[in-house]
Image (cartoon, rainbow, N blue to C red; front, side):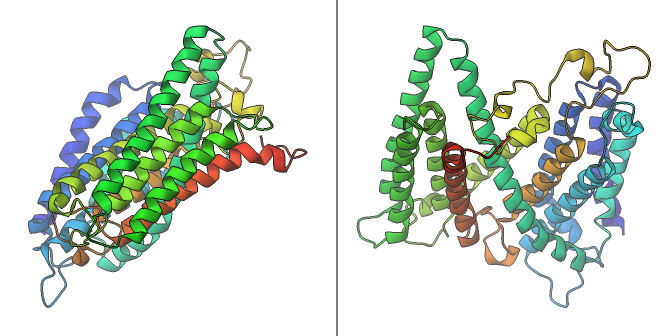
Length: 417
């Protein structure tokens, strides 16, 4: 009980420090970034708990219920999953309570943007309570997190597609030579990086004295996809651009690398096996960074979720500010008089759902998508499960991008907006 209280106090202390510095200054426009700050703080706290909480959890009787105490890594993973569960419940509850909010006269609109001291208190309570639930609850959550993390990876891909299309459109619309040159430079750099990096992957993950057909297949397919992106995007009947194709190619090469570098440290075809610890940590940092960037982007763009799967030629995909909207609307001011309802500028439910799924993904990122006893404690995000999750994410990225290009040709009479 004393150990649990210490752990709870540590969580509460981190949250209260964040609360005191941010709650007073949060406005409607900064509320979304405050949610991002809370999520980023939870990621940092998860990492710290994984590194240092195991000795405490080993002395908590309702967590260490085993006749023979499990390895230390089991308690490390358990701490991460419990904090992730509290984080998930926080955002999932908000997602449910915000269903149906359509205008700013709804009382829930004020709760979404304000009440930050109460929100931090709720978050702390939920996180602390998760350290009192039985292990079976955490085990069920771990299983569910694998599916939720898969959904988040798909959302992450869709966000990347949305970002690249809007980036390309914003520069093209400037209709100036310097921006056209900038597009060309970015495209050339991305494609050179893709194929140069692919060559490096051949050296690292295809040792000459071993038969590494699976690794070669992954790398060659990545290069083929990069060529396919350019060919399809440049087809005269496709309303595409080669710059987004080049950015997606770099991302696919990166996913291929993270997949191959996640192969077990004792696998002969993993040329980085002598540096497994360093590679694992760097991959973890990059994974956490991309997760934070994804949720931050969702805070800036989540309201356009209806356009994420729209092809570039869709009228909806050209919308510039579906979430940011007019500043007066965002602050609750409008040109209309009286109490006329003003529509909300983005979907609150979808916004919180992204954070809930990201909470699941962050847990899988820190636990390697597998049980704690199957990996060395100092290696995070390593194992065949992680390899296949990431390579499937690469293929899903390629499929979604190609779909955004060819869908208008395959279904010319269908509205993808």
